[in-house]
Length: 342
Image (tube, rainbow, N blue to C red; front, side, top):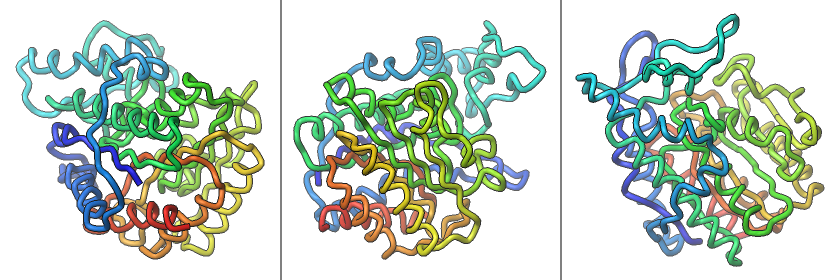
């Protein structure tokens, strides 16, 4: 299986995040991608290539112009004010406030964020831009006839909506790739999100569309991040009614429960009969993940890949979460090997 990867991900390395009321090292760190790449190489999964350059146009098919301008200019504006620490938002247009985009840089950050887990650093824009190019390059390979490809994206993307960042995510890589398939002639696309945390951004982007079927298997938002989206009664709106499937699971869910949910999702995807399947590949479902509460073990990821392969569709894997850094490479590549060997 071809892997697309860029060293630019290392340009985004935040100084810390708030955990338990204290500033601690970020769970979303460059070592995540480094461990996955090392495992791809060790297992000789296939060729590894740098991304091609597709520019901003395919990104702008998903993300708003104001949002992209903010992402590109935020750090320069922050630094011009004499700041050198990470740029983080502090005020949001919550209920009973007006969601009007202000002129002030700090206000714009709150307007374009839903939490404080997407810091902007000096290298953030280049890292997220290159991450999207990684996804687009892998997408082009699948569109050209490859059975599968792996976009080793970092930062991840599935929490980002069209104009809002959060949860370590800035540009929605899987959504950008999905739209590229449409722009190149696909009629129906399915997105399967297996990350522990609900892909709220992906759901939001495609919620009113019937040409994209989105399935999420995740910790219930009743107790888990992102808390405010991901319930089972969210099935789509307008033309998209019936094309969004949420399978929220209880804390402590192991393969017996999780695998049954995967079967349900795959059955719905098979019935939808997409031209291509995109997998938001988060492996924070692992039993020792520091910010998650499922109980999958490393061999389960082989079975995950095997079940996805049974769909018999061209498949693009896009890297999302997974924060047990020592095991992230094993678990991510197990999915890919399970798929490839099926």
